[in-house]
Image 1 (cartoon, helix red, strand yellow):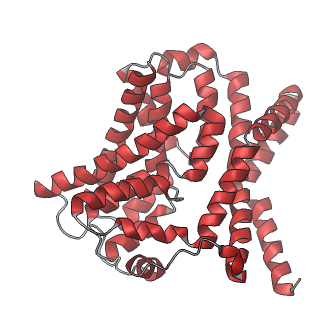
Image 2 (cartoon, rainbow, N blue to C red; image 1 turned 120 degrees about the horizontal axis):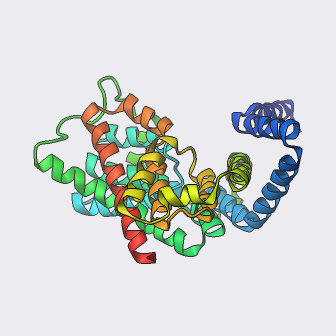
Length: 346
């Protein structure tokens, strides 16, 4: 093993030790060990059992994400942005629901798409759909909330994308959202823009190329660390919710499935949401406490698109009218997703 590889590994493990998520986990257990030792032991056991229960879905999701990176399957996204405008919106919504981007990670790609001359309508469709679902999240959602919820959230992701794309088209035809969507000075798409304009072929049998094999294992390791820390933190928090949040509290706020409860879940989810995978165990815990399915769906959809870090990133690159449309469409989409899901599951 070369010195460069050793140094890279050392930097990676140092980053893990100093990662805020791991620091928060350590602080939580340290406080519990001092204040309520029995709960510390209970939380460790709860977290270990929860992680074990989702391990098959976790491993499969990591493998899929690494395979997509190694083969270059992410280049298929570029094919969604060609053809008639209405069809571009439809394909962008579908591709968004399949793409492996979080609410923050999608921002550079969005900037590159707009800089490359892709119209705002299909970009908005992709923008809103992308953070809500991907193959990895589908598997983890299935493991935590069940197949019905995972399928419904996939449909919601596509629906929110369609709402965003066609909503922008309607506004543009009414004379709103005309002109450049990005702020002045943001005009360099960089490598991402080049990839979108000239997508490379997908190499499905990646193992024949050493560089792609390395990319697979590098991505698998990084994804394991990323998902692992957030899922661990989420299960730790869920263990505390189960122990300390009264059942009647959640049920009284978001348990009746009414319009008001779904609206409340939407408005609470938008600023407080942190990570798509981390939110799943928390929502599972809330549903055990009495949260209605529609409210849970609204919380996941609303927060998945418009978490505070993502909103700040959008604010930094987009014009104010585009930012306002992004927030409004995401909020309406989350609310409608919750209402429709509540009607279906009743």
